[in-house]
Length: 290
Length: 251
Image 1 (cartoon, helix red, strand yellow):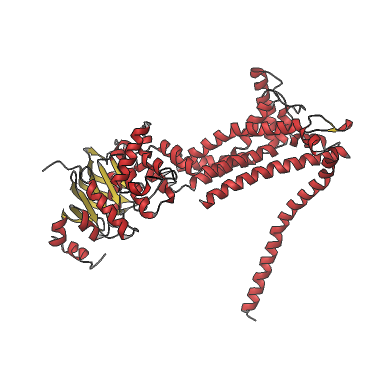
Image 2 (image 1 turned 180 degrees about the vertical axis):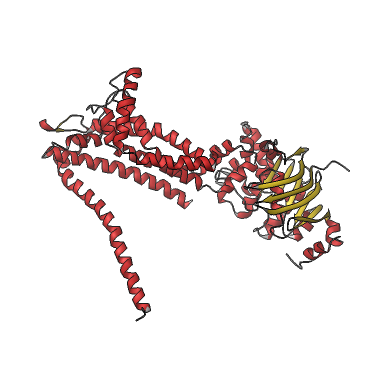
């Protein structure tokens, strides 16, 4: 019996539903993660008090002190530092790829950069410990395991994010802009920094912000190279402990309030990353409206 | 006869094995409006792009000689940047850069390293007056250029080119897609501009060529069919094809 139009329509509907459910199941897992973090962490924040939790630097769970301020500051600085290393490097790399590189170079560099994203973070951390940490210790002083080392390694780790998004932004700049700028006597570099980068600004900012999101969430490499000392860093050569590394380091033996405090740290991270993603979305949308 | 500003001798252009221009020879003199007309795909725009060295494409074969302001622009040694400062091009679709009206106007000067505020202002004003746009935008030079209407954007592009005081202004269909009033304004501006500049005007609007050009050329399928005084071309053309095109029998 040949399928009637009604049959086909029904089948279409079913397939549509199935995909809708599958799509929502990934969203649902995000919802569950958020829910559990909040259920576990929120009562603890209420008990200790938001101010004591966020703004105190005393973290000794065995004695009932749960202040994560030092870790917030460390996470903040390591993110900014990663941006300082990875941002300019990534931006210039994408400018080279889009504006200057021949098709042949692009065919070599782009896949190589994508490979960079596929290297496990423990490998970055290992390379950092073996090569970068002694270098910093011998030439700059301090223990080597430090804010600076973490910033450099994280700066490299955010490169794929920064590059792929800012390449997209630069490619999206209409060629007519470049032609118009050339026809007024601009050189390639003048056109790039006065017109193209300017036109791609919102996309580039999005790239940098998402790179920051990647840096703030990184854990494994940071544990290995940051030294994990619990204090507010006063120099770039001081060891640090970020929020993520604290969770990873202590979750093995934490119980009770201590465990809840780690989940509460997760809430803070959650807001950190959400704020960065919101900023990135706002910039991306601003461009779309234009 | 004076030495022509643009002198093409047997210029042929081939891209991806397809002939675009075939054996073009013509002269363009100082302070004239030289019209280039013909149906789409005739090579008009490609010719302009050769003149200011913005022709791009892979697998391009160019023959012949094309002297612009005494320099052979088809040779490999030519540096396009200074050439484009003397030979400005305005495209068919207005491309305003994503910045303010003022920054658009002075872009060409800024990239030459000129920072002097009064000089920039003066050039901006000169360009706007030349393109008959000054009265409309004088109060809002700091506003984004993309907010202007299509006709104003096109005149801004002309003004931007004029702010550089180029020797030659290349216009590629500057009034396509504009209303009659904007078209009229631009044509008036061109007549004023030719007193000090040389203008090459590409248009497939034959009436426009008849209205504003002094001499003109007819391009058809990459070939130069005829060139001469506009008054003569439009009254007693030598070639039958020209006559047919002007009379609207094809194209």
